[in-house]
Length: 214
Length: 214
Image 1 (tube, rainbow over the protein chains, first blue to last red):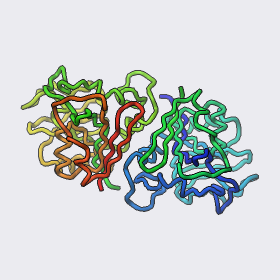
Image 2 (image 1 turned 45 degrees about the vertical axis):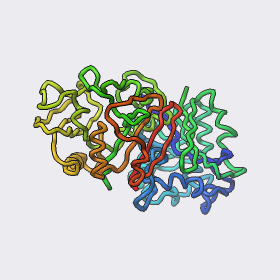
Image 3 (image 1 turned 30 degrees about the horizontal axis):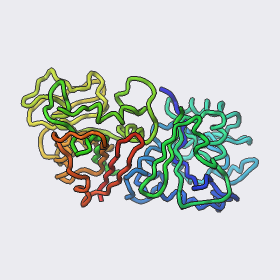
Image 4 (image 1 turned 45 degrees about the horizontal axis):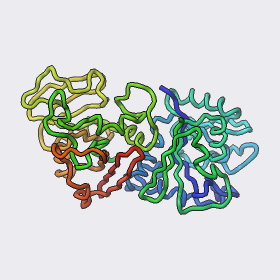
């Protein structure tokens, strides 16, 4: 079986930004409001961070429940893992508390060394190197399953430029514009030379963009 | 965790029929052409009966790859299992060959006794009784996972009437009309008193109907 590299449930503003400017401990998405970008996902029954029962089981729930489906590892950028730059603060163990929602090995891209650590069933590894080499490590750790490319947008752009992404799901919040920040695209059409694209508006108001390699 | 009872990937004609008239060994769906009703699913990468690599990974693939997601047992009607009526022909082991696509226990509703048998990782059990009692058996066999209600339409109607169905995905082929046969509904609106409904047209032409309990 092929091991795919997949972007899943990437939240994007209507003008193409995955995060705003000025990331900090208090504002992990900078001037963007993550609750606004994630509201469609948070309303579903299968949202991994859900703390109360209930939630919708319509179209959007297919996307949130597919998040962990056949995923054996995640790759994420340093800025998804932490608000800090430079050498690692060893006290910092990510934004997710004692039960991170990954449940697989996670490979954090960073130029600074750090020893791996485990929280519940998620182990964080800290790696540098070219995207292709990092993907090779993640594939080995995934033991035959697929690899999720978890973002942020800068990391996704690097892997797109290296032509390593097999499928990508981007959820565009029509009502949210950011104006500045970290941008995935000016238009999804930029990817049409290499990807099929289906654009599926959800009854919730979010617009699902589903890409797969030509 | 709640164990849901789920209808998944039920193929329906635009006029509400799940199968035509005159089921036989040669025509499992009667005068309906199953290839026509299933074409949207057969085109996807995750279609369980796929024999060649390739296939689309757009919206429709979310539905085909969700087919086995967290499913621990299936319930099906006698007419999905076999073209025969009356006492069982013990030579008949279903339509699916040596590798049935279920990979879980399957409970076949029938008034006629038959001993369970196993093909690959699918075990077929033959049960009678009220829908609620059969569901209880299937839930126990599913070991905490959900139960798929596999059809046909007559079986689904029985479980709907007993108010046991939690979620239902029906894929309506807009271009296919059957005129007669086994009917699920005159209109999906018949279910709106008890279910939420999202209607999602796919770029492939099929229209996904997603129901979940109010």
